[in-house]
Length: 280
Image (cartoon, rainbow, N blue to C red):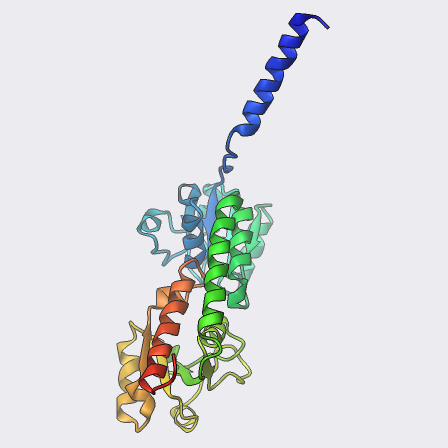
């Protein structure tokens, strides 16, 4: 083999090695999010610039508020969605109109359904979204962080003295959660016992007598629900002195800020334990 051929082969090898050394670039997508929590995931994975349309109430982060709104939980603007030429749609089957999702599928647009049933699925959901929008590396980093935080909650709180709680979703009518809601997982992680865990539906309607007779030690509700907190002051229940107010954007959205909501819940339940002279 001639010297010229040796030099040519060496040059080709250097070019190939140089190409392999380049960082993998995330592919560019045109993403539509059909739930506020999914919008948060897209931004958390660094793909906010690829987001071309969002559902109503996608208010975090602030940049999301400037994205085109393509509908709400009751109605999707099919024509507007198609005009945005999405390459992938992230859906929340439980909160999106099923008939309109079926129409969108007829246009052969990839629709990735994100419908978690349990909080421990959070890292897997993060990875699934990462694969769907071409952000696998970013998703893996975030998923590992989430797993570490969930493991921390289990280690530090799950085995502490149980506290009986009533988790109030709404007051008129009085709505709570059962073990079929993923919010119940948060209670278990934090060492709480849901007084309506055995209800047959995920979000059952109950009455005041049922709550009072179950003798909860604490009542959990949204920090924005001032009216919901007031209704307990007129009743003779110790729980009215232990109202746990949680940030609804953290705990009620199955998104990247969910771990902050769980942490807030765990800390407040533990404060109640300490006030009852329990060993930390």
